Image (cartoon, rainbow, N blue to C red; front, side):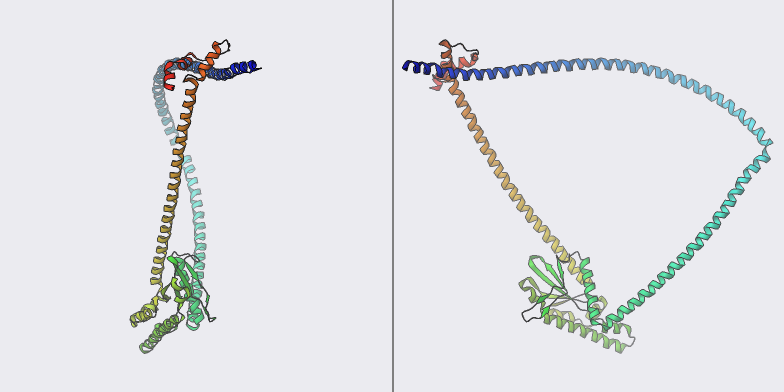
Length: 430
């Protein structure tokens, strides 16, 4: 039993090694045969391409010869055509002269008949032209009538608009509520033209209830960057100004002008008492824009009372008219555009930072991958050295098994065996 186990250990292990080596060599030989087949296929393809090239060259030579022959035949045809052209030209001239002589003779004989045939179509054309003139005149008359009706309609529309304008003027003079609504309408129209967005950069009729239960509702709240707010309130003072503009009596005009200025001062005082700035806390600017929608009335008041602007400013009220308010709102819109651009720039910088971080992580992963590939290559070399280097390498052991009488179907390559049996490999391995 001991002898059998020893024999099994002696012959079984090398036999397993030999089987593994035979499989490896079989794989190498199969790969070599596949490479030889691919080389043979490539050689056949190259030969086929060379034959196709020769055939194409022969066809090109043949086509060139045929083209030269066709060119020569074409030149001959052109010469024949030129000769035929000259002959036809001569015949045409002779025939034209004959026809001209014949037509001249016939024209003399048939002059009267031909003249009548020419005048009848002309008479027909004149009759048609007369009818067209009559039709055009009738159409023009109808168009003039339609234009007259349209002008009358526009005149009536202009009269109605004038009446409606006078009615609006009378309403503005007599009803302060109507005046206020009209001022708010003008204010919102300017806001829409300023480039600001409703609900985004400005709010309309933003209502607030205070601790004492009272309600404050500024006409417009313009939002500014960094959470700031600017209140705009419309104050229409037209009654006294309209009477001042309509009267021709200097004394009455001066009296109404003073009333107009006093009305503005009352609006300033009332707006100052509302303390709109407290509604938005630290986010509110420390002044309110008082909008006067009638620019001539605004300019006349400042011209007559130059201190009016300073008096309002002392109460944290800034007087504005349509032109100055538009300039202010356009400036705010520009500030918002700059703010959006700055935010976009910050976001771009943030995204670039994230991208750079991702790039650094990717480079780190590539470096780790390179290190692992180097380690794998080192492991491969170590394993291969164990296969063929040193006194107890596997190739030497397998060859000894073969020398003991094992007859394998395949053999290892001679260079590989020589390398494994080289004494220098034993010294280096030792």
